[in-house]
Length: 325
Image 1 (tube, rainbow, N blue to C red):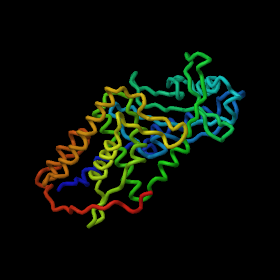
Image 2: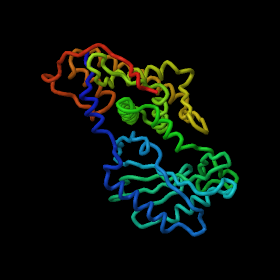
Image 3: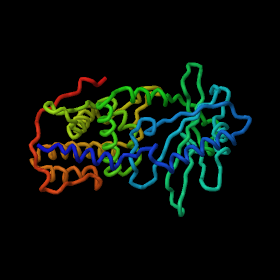
Image 4: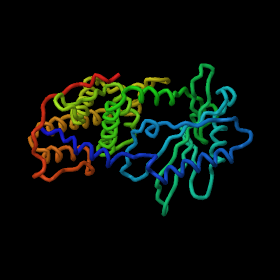
């Protein structure tokens, strides 16, 4: 059997996007927060910021289009009823950040700052605007500038609680394997799913719900191939007419609800192909051949070693980590 763990590790190191190691994005982040502090209107309430999304979860993947992003939350010290028109707070943020070297757009879930080089977007930072309701829940400002006043709304969205819940699900080597599996799934999605209705957070929460760490029972080494394969099987086992993955925090919405029935059917077919490919790779006696199969699923960044270096004895024993929560 070929588990290709060395190649999975190499693949992960290639595709991971480490925000703290990205000097340019880190500098942009600091500049934005500084501009927000210095330029925001005196009429705006006090605020605090926090990191959310893949940045906070440490599950970022280098995008195939070369345009990485970062998500920042801005919690204003006010209640939703203090600003019945949430667009007003989003305009405070937008107006504080407008400068010549970037575009700043108010989108429905956030204020997006995009940077360009030679008229090509190089990276962007999404800044979500929140208030806090009487139940101490964060509410996100949900509207564009073009949204009619009566349709602008505050929507309960517990982003900080989601980060904590996902991060606390595993620890130690289990958490590391969880993050590798999530990154691998994200890159697989980018390679095989041709629309945006299969969001990264949907895959991440599916992993939070159904992922189990896998290690070799003999030497204790990680077996990412088995862990990812078993996760996919769990997703397929829990398929009804559709795959439903609800947020584990308010508003508890289905993260795949925007997928059409046709997209959902295609998604299932692709997941089955991934599962079958992982099974086929595991059964290969030679790592070279296994990695050729895995590359078809995960893309050109998945390494295929020279054939002469790949045939090694492996253990068939596997165990589920007892450290998982």
